[in-house]
Length: 143
View 1 (cartoon, one colour):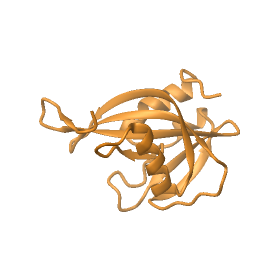
View 2 (spheres, rainbow, N blue to C red):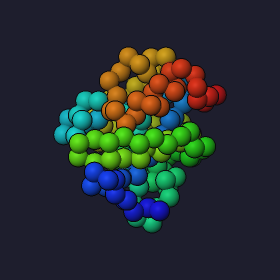
View 3 (tube, rainbow, N blue to C red):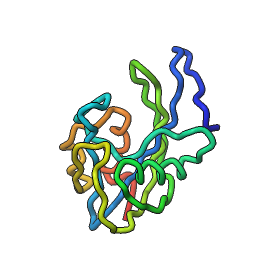
View 4 (cartoon, helix red, strand yellow):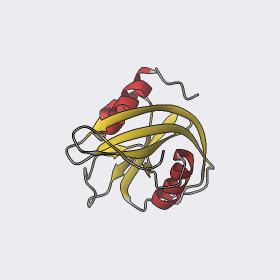
């Protein structure tokens, strides 16, 4: 199902993808742009699933649109839901494999490569926090 469903509170559930990209034992995180909702917070790159798109297709497209990055999408790491005041999202995380070619920021204001333990040092969007905690604790193996 690629269309939003509705929660009892009337919020549509929007399907969103997130990429956990690893390089030399570190994970890529990106800081939301100044004009974005939740500006300045950190996240795993990704975006909203469009109609007719699989989550994997979405993630490949979003990485290209947001970072000019080519990546192969690997295994599903987990799914969580978060209810914001303005909407509810289902966040679908995947391990992604960057091809090593240079990439650039298009919608984000910054990026960095951090170890799983360092993830806790950054202010993440609430929807990303379950994955931050799982990665920092080693509950999700990436290597």
